[in-house]
Length: 386
Image (cartoon, helix red, strand yellow):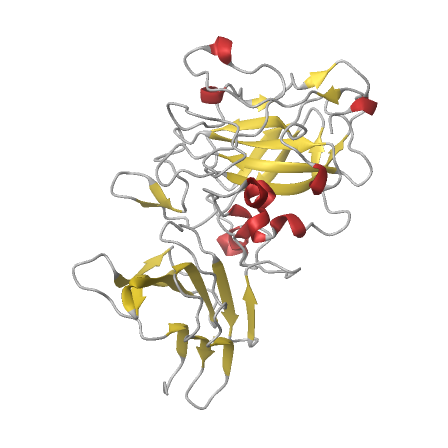
């Protein structure tokens, strides 16, 4: 028994092998009175050297009584582990699991983002998981998890995490003002946005405000995959005039706006083409996309949204989107008109192949910054692609 308050991140026979990078680390992030204390069990092992576990336990200075467990990778789902918190040997406790084989997702050594986050609040004796199943989880990073080496069925709108099956509440849309601009928050976790539970977290960056760097000069925390804002490649929004995500295809999902030098700061604005037509009843389906320029494992990001176009009387229709082409050194090769999002680094469904550098959303792949005003055909709205 443990006599005092105890956080059981993964209570099992964990061990560290000498002469390796495996260890238990700790440190603080942020500044008073908003510091975080992080304990990291990096590649801790149990049983034998081929079984591993990588997780963090995070305590918050401005959220006394709250503790988060972040699980990055594991070769076992918790068949012999206890996970939870307790106040004392005889006091109250919050238990997530005891000896449940599938309690924690089994990952791989390539996992760089948490596959599961558990948040325990001892003030209210409650525990929440990452935001699935209709949970209003303030500590949710599922929508921004990177994707690599997945089948198209799994990476398309993050099906492998169930994100395509969790639509927003009825009538809740991302509004796109035709000819104007819209503003979003880009962050590593909902907790770092105004949709979280603590406005003290809403800083310039969509994550910890004190940047941490790798030995080779890349920002690693928050993981922006770039040395600085100047080298941040760009992000996009694409739109499909389908109100059902099941009917969206690469050909009818058209990139309509690009913002260079993102992601970097939390609050980011994008421009909307003035001729973007109104959406059908039930709205459109949009997606946010990002291909990092490097600074870490190559991957891609695709996040779904329900959206509507406001203030438009346009009757133009979108052209069928074509795969973008690497054209940094030869502008004549750039795809004119409607472009698809970039699909790369996956098992199948890729639309970009054998490029000499990272295929990013900027001039490298022929994307101009701002509203994409050349994505239309000269015909009536009634025959929109899709």
